[in-house]
Amino acid sequence: MKPRHLVTLRDLSPAEFRALIARATELKALKTPYEPLKNKVLGMVFEKSSTRTRVSFEVGMAQFGGSSIFLSPRDTQLGRGEPIEDSARVLSRMVDCIMLRTHAHSTVEIFAEYSRVPVINGLTDRFHPCQLLADMQTYFEHRGDIAGKTVAWVGDGNNMCQTYIDAAEMLDFELRIACPPGYEPETDLVEAAGRRVVVERNVQAAVSGADLVVTDVWASMGQESEQDERISAFENYQVDGSLMALAHSDALFMHCLPAHRGEEVSTEVLEGPQSVVWDEAENRLHAQKALLEFLLAD
Ligand code: CP
Ligand code: NVA
Image (cartoon, rainbow, N blue to C red; front, side):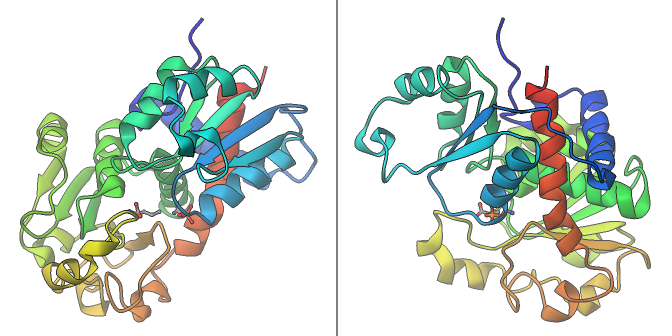
C-alpha cells in the first residue's frame, strides 16, 4: 500500500486538516508523557537553512519517543549527484518518515513517488504546508473557526502565499493577495481557487476589514541576489501600524519568520498586540506532532 504524504496541503482532506488542527491543540495541552513513535526515526533532508522547522521536528520526535537524523546535501551523496529516486528508495528502507526542505518542489514530489514511507514537505520554492498547519492552529486558538473570515496576504506571491491559497479553499476563507506586478502567485493556482482568492493591486483595499493580515520576507531563500530590486518593488508593501489600522479591530497579524523588521513589517506591528508570531512559531511543534502521529502512529 502507498504511504500517505504531505507534499502539499491537498494531500489532506478538509476534514483531516481540521482534525489535525484540533489534535495539535490537544497535544499542546497534554501534560503527561505520550510516546506513540517509540523507536521510530525521522530522516530530515535540508537543502536550505532552518531554525523552526528543524528544531520543531527534532523536538517533536524526541517528545514522541522517537529520534531524527539531520541530513545535509553537503555531507551526503545527495549533494554529489546521487539521483533523488535512488536516495528516496534507500533512505525509506531505513527510516520511518522523511522530511525534506528543498529548492525545487519537484524534488519532494519525486521523493514521495519513490519512498516507501511518508514524505513531508518542510518547504519548497512553491509550498510550505507545515507552516499553514501551525498558522491555522494559531488562528483557531485565538479566534475560533476561520471559515467565512477574510485573510489579507501582503507581499510576495511566494511559497507561503501559495499555501494560503490551498488553505483558503480547504478551510473556506476569503484570501486577498496584495502584491506588486510581476510578483503574483502562479496564475493556475489563483484561477483554480475561484472566487475565494483575489489578487488586489490596492494594498489598503486588500487589508480593509480583514480578520488576519499575513506577510513574509520579500526575498525568499534562493532569491538573495534579487534582494535590492525586490526592496524597490515592495517599498509600498510594508505592514505597518497605519495599514493594520484598516483591518478589523480584532484582526491578528502573522509572519512565518524569520522577519526583516523595517522591510515587510514594522517593529511596531511585529511586536504589537495584534501579533501572534511567537504562538505561531511554537505551534509548529504541536501541529507537526499531530501530523507525525497521523502519518506514523499505529
Ligand atoms: N518558518 C520557518 O519555516 O522557519 P525556519 O526557516 O526557521 O524553519
Ligand atoms: N518564503 C520564505 C519562508 C521562510 C520560512 C522562504 O522561502 O525563504
